[in-house]
Amino acid sequence: GAVVSQHPSRVICKSGTSVKIECRSLDFQATTMFWYRQFPKQSLMLMATSNEGSKATYEQGVEKDKFLINHASLTLSTLTVTSAHPEDSSFYICSVLPWSAYNEQFFGPGTRLTVL
Amino acid sequence: QKEVEQNSGPLSVPEGAIASLNCTYSDRGSQSFFWYRQYSGKSPELIMFIYSNGDKEDGRFTAQLNKASQYVSLLIRDSQPSDSATYLCAVNILTSGTYKYIFGTGTRLKVLA
Image (cartoon, rainbow over all chains, first blue to last red; front, top):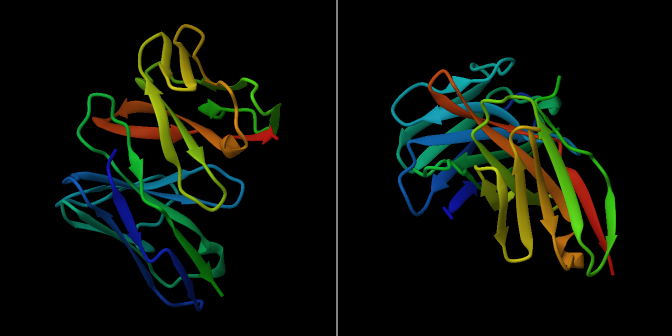
């Protein structure tokens, strides 16, 4: 499977600040990456699809001006939570989609965001 | 209406028994089906995927797919306490030229030593 890293693994910030999360594909070039959010005891909710060199595609209900996604290279996508508030506290997980006939995706280790 | 449904559990089985996890989906256009395991506080890890009707075996795991019934299951043989986790079912559908993944809410499995 693909190897994916995320940084930071855990972040605590004050309300109103912005937080950047990095997602790196370590062993192949990923044209497509996904960003998910998971609240406690809930399933993964797709936030957006990140496409290298183009604008991200956001899911309904996800504010694109609040969750800024940049996929500037084939190995790096970033998610910036702008003006974070306590309700943004969640587990943010990225995944990569290697080229495969079956389209299995592989997840990064996740970033736990806590907004005070 | 949820697109992917799973029983939230917990499903408790004794060590060494077979654990059976079930998932139903609503979109007949679903093309591939995935089972992920997620330990508490960790991200999901892929166990296996299946895309054609029938059974697919990988070690202690067997995935079963029935597209007519829109049903996919995961069997875990010789269950171990280390298998205790939440199991997520996911389906892959093609919409507007891009693949989209829909996850179920997961079934929590407890393997009792």
